[in-house]
Amino acid sequence: MKSRLLTGSRLKGFAMVLTGAVCWGLSGTVAQHLFQNEGFHPGWMVTVRLILSGSLLLIGVSLWRKDDAVQGIWRDPYDRLRLLLFAVLGMLAVQYTYFAAIAAGNAATATLLQYLGPVLITAWWAFSERRWPSAKEAASVLLALMGTFLLVTGGRPDSLSISGAALFWGLGSAAALAFYTLYPSGLLRRWGSATVVGWGMVIGGVGLSLIHPPWPAGGTWTPVNALFVLFVILFGTLVPFFLYLESLRYIRPTETGLLASAEPLTASVAAVLWLKVPFGAPEWVGALCIIATVVLLSAGESGKREEAENAVADRKRTLQGG
Image (cartoon, rainbow, N blue to C red):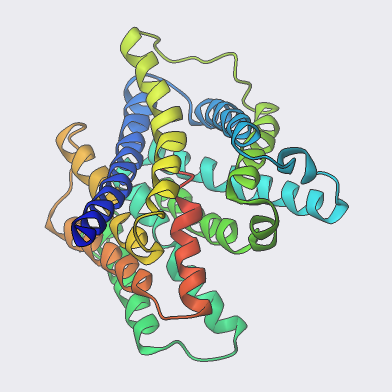
C-alpha cells in the first residue's frame, strides 16, 4: 500500500511538471502568433505580463504566507538595491529579450537559444573556481555549440537560417537568464522565490511601461486573441510556476529539471504544426543537442553544484515560454 502511494505521488509530481513545461512551451508559440499575425508588440506584451503576473503573485504570497515578506523585503537598503538590479537586469531583461527573439524569429528557436543559459552558468562556475571544466561540462558545452550551429545555420556554414536579430535577442536571452539565475541567491534564501519574483515582475513591468505603456495595446482584438493574451499571461507564468513548485513536494528537483526539457520540444512541435515554421533535419538535430545539454547538466553532481543546477530550472520556470 505504501509503495503504491509513493508511486501515485511521484506520478502526480511528474504530471505537474510536464503540464507546466507544456504550458510554457505553448505560451511562446501563442506569443509568436500574436506578434507576427495579429500585430501585437512584444514590448506591450512584456509590460502587461509582468505587471499583472507579478501583482497576482504578490497577492497570493500575502494570502498564503503568515509573515510580512512582501513588505519586509523593502526594509533593508542592501536588499532594496539588489531587488531593483534583479528586476531590471534580470527579470525585465530576460523577459524582453525572449519575446523580442520570438518576434524576430520563432518560438522554437527563441526557447532553444534561451536554454543555452545553463551552459553559460557552467562556464561561469569553472571560471570563478579557477579550474578547467569537467568532462561532463566540456561535453555539455560542445553539444550546445553544435546544437546552436545547426539551429542557426541549418547545417550550412555560409548562411543563417534565422535572422541576425533573432540570433542576437536569443543569445541575449540566454545571457540574461544566466544573470537572472546567479544574481539573486541571497534574496531567494531570505525572502523566498515567490516574493522576489513577484516584486521583480512588478518593478520590471512598471519600468518598461515608461517606454511601452500598457494601455495603447495595438494589435487585432478579437475574443480569440483576448484569450490568447490571457493564456500567455496566466498559463505562461502563474499556472506553470505553481505546478512546478508544487511538484517539488513529490519528486526531486533534479527530476523536475529533466522533465522541464519538454518545454523547448513543445515549443518546437507547436511552431512547426500550428504556425508552419520551417524546421528541417539539421534544426531538429540541433534542438536535440541543446535539449541533451540541459539533460546532462540537470543530472548534476551532489552538493553545491547540484543545488545550483537545480536552481537554474527552479527560477527559469517563472519566466516562459523563459
